[in-house]
Amino acid sequence: NGIVLAEDGKKMSKKLKNYPDPMEVVDTYGADALRLYLLSSPVMQAENLSFSESGVGEIVKKNINRLNNVLAFYKLYEDGTVRDYKSTHILDQWILARVAALIGESTEGYEKYQLDRAVRPLALFIDDLSVWYLRRSRERIKADGNDKKAALGTLRYVLHALSRIMAPSTPFFAEYLFQAVREEEDEESVHLATWPEMPRFNFDAVDVLTKMFATRFIVSQALEARDTAKIKVRQPLARLIIPDELHLSTEFMSLIIDEVNVKKIEVGDVLKFDTNIT
Image 1: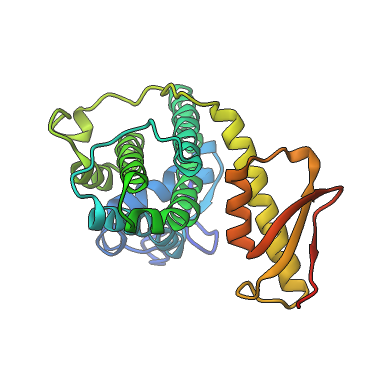
Image 2: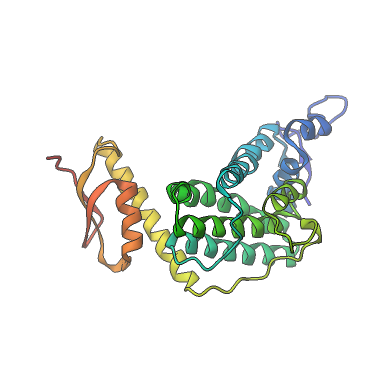
């Protein structure tokens, strides 16, 4: 490992008192946040780290608090739905594929004792889970019917798997998460559970991941074009033209239509908007 320095890059010194009390950091942000901050830092690659208390605070905001909000929303609507991974909805399949990818990345990192590589993918996954999956699935979960059950079953499966992946890096929050989604036949604690194995799905996970990446890229580019044209998202537009080589199915097209607020999508050579407002 590298050396943990003060925030100004100088050596930590009791005489200078140029570092925060470690226990005060734990009391303020939690041990999990401090662990995750250090484990994902350059210090794991034998590089020096200028310790930043605000950096630990960012871990809380962007990871632990955000995931806690996902869990709180799930608990609000869970209604005893058991975990499941057989949903045919494209959003459910995508987040399941993301879990599989996360298991693969984390497993490889831990097996090679590259702890930073094992934990860094967590932040991106939590962002995907909160900002894309849950936001796009809120109305499904609030409604009644089979689609609600599929979303809740998938989300429970994802949170259960995630608690086991997080157990080595954030042991306290992982236990809290595990207990919140635990089922009767599960182990008493996440720290008694086995490391998750790579799941096998009845869909092409790589294809789903690739096409959702393209979908989100199109959404990002289209919203940027709206911003440049100074047309707010709440203003519907007639059409969006996307490149024909993407071969996106209706499910992905529907996500783009909703996110970008256009009436229809057409296929063409390049990505462009019809900005004429009638």
